[in-house]
Image (cartoon, rainbow, N blue to C red; front, side):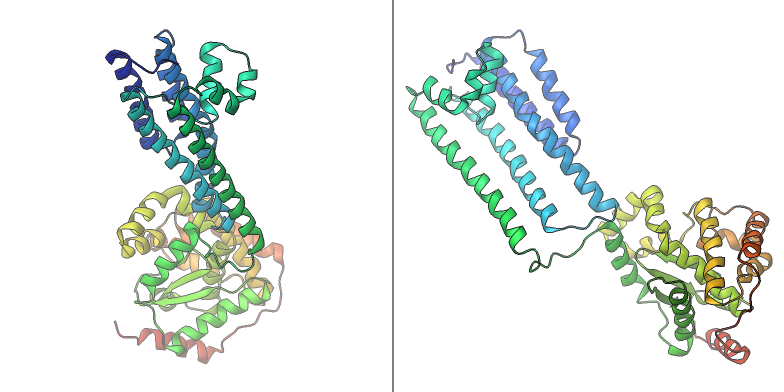
Amino acid sequence: MKTDLNSNEKELVINGYLMSLAVFVTTMPIPIINLLANLYYCISYRKSEYVVRWHAYNSFLSQVPLFFINSFTWCVVWKVLWSEWTLSLWIISYLVIAFLLNAGEIISSVICCIRVSRNKEVKVPFISPLTDVLVEKKSWNRWKNGWEDVSQLHEENAVASQNKILNDFAWCTFFISVIFILILGIGTKQQWNIPKFSIESLLEKLMIQDIESKQITDEQCIEPLKNMAATICEKNGLDSVNIYLVKNEEVNAYAFSGRNVVVYTGLIKDCEKENELMAVLGHEIAHVEKKHVIKSIKRNVGIRVLLSAFLGNYADITTMLSMNYLSKENEIEADLLSVEYMSNAGFDPSGLVDFLKRTSDEKLDKMNILSDHPTTQKRITKLNEKIKHVGQKQYGTLLSSEEWVNFKNKVKDLPY
């Protein structure tokens, strides 16, 4: 192949590689754009001089495998961030390999520019033999015997021979490293302590970090709440939830990432009976079980929450997650599950109905429990239908009347 280019040809080739490099770096998260940009470059120079066409094809073909690699990488990262996938050793290994391949492509593009500017030959392992076939319309046997052909065609060129040896060594080293990583992953799978990572666990840590500075730790105030939640979970065969009591006059309670529920003191003061408070807890536990919160975050405030997380604005995260972002369907589902939970636990499930009848729509609008809620009357109707469906039973209470009053008074007497 011609390596002694005139200034015009040299400029076209170098600009092509630099364009490929620039597009690659800026659009790595969107592989299809990168591939299309290089394809456009390839088509644009299809009628140019042979050497220009060769480099155009070479640049495009080098992006094809990276298109599939980066597309899959993008899917993996998305699944880790926005679903229940965790960052396992296998995923880490794949991401490392993808990063090395991408880094290799960037370095390769730079080297191609330098070599072209110095009138030296450019040969990319696996890619250049295929480029020869497409541009020169040679037999496909040339591709099958790629490594031998590269050597035979350019064995008079000492630089090309040295490059071949170096490329052989680099690729062999790379594949040996990949095999070593995979063997290491299989052989030491049980010994590796890779911390699980997901956007849900990240937000959970950030929320807890902010709430812990505000929560009430008085045992006489927090223990009754924990016992209520624990009873609901135990009687319904659910995993336990963490309860946080926060000093705030708003009538509010909300679930957040993980298995966590925050209760404001204003809610306890507003509830007239134990079963009202327990029904609200059951509602929030239903959100936890159905993962309504993390799904809502992804759908509505995911980017804002992530930006706040990276900027360290933990208070903003707490505010966003306690606001009304749950859908009407989520709220109705949580209502109906609350009735089931209460009935199964042996407590009167009509507490949520009583709470809704007494609480104004203005207050409900501020509550996560009823965010973006259907009309109060519609919810009461659905709840009453569900209560009839579970049937009448003998219901008990967790606290005696005296214990309930003492609990409320203790919360009321908390200093603000």
